[in-house]
Figure 1 (tube, one colour):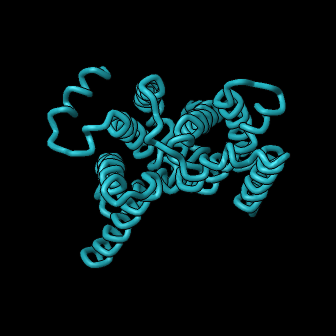
Figure 2: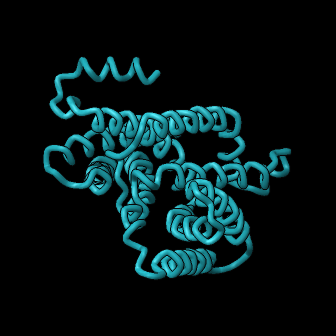
Length: 280
């Protein structure tokens, strides 16, 4: 797979593809952005922006847990903590709390503070500061294969669980009465989001990963006429933002992650204005 993609990229007359690290970054973008486009639609529909943002911020605490317990691979500790944190937030989200978004925000702030406090001890935070904005140019072929595997898992999960998740998003009580395993599907979805966020955060960045999940889906909702278009446009906008943002970051000599978000934000505002003009 990697060899085939590499040969296709070699045929493109783009100067930045002369460098292997840019080829790997483009491969990663072509895997990560469809993931974000797919998941973002459900996150936007279910009003989970606070939830996904809190998950991203929990990365610091997950890493700090790994440091405290001497776990060599901090990705493992980040993913384990993210799964527990996601299930806890999901439990809170479904409780009859008037301001559940406030409670989630409190947990998010607390997790960031705890993580920063531990990681900054003895002035060591500089080793982890790159997580704030990410560095997709440092991705390796092995890490790309891991992302491709999670893309396949996500597509299979989406094919099996989409109808159930969509029903839950519309009316969870009605979905439960039809025999849909509401809690199981809902928890499986938030665990999947947690794993994808943690796997991507090293290259996308804590500060901007939530924007990449939300903006393409929000832009797609502005112009989609039905549910099928909504998902298709979300993936298309996400991939386009990723590829164009990566190319612009190379030629403008700026960080790739923020440029991806800027492109997605511009597309959102264009679609927002288009909706206002053509739909009144």
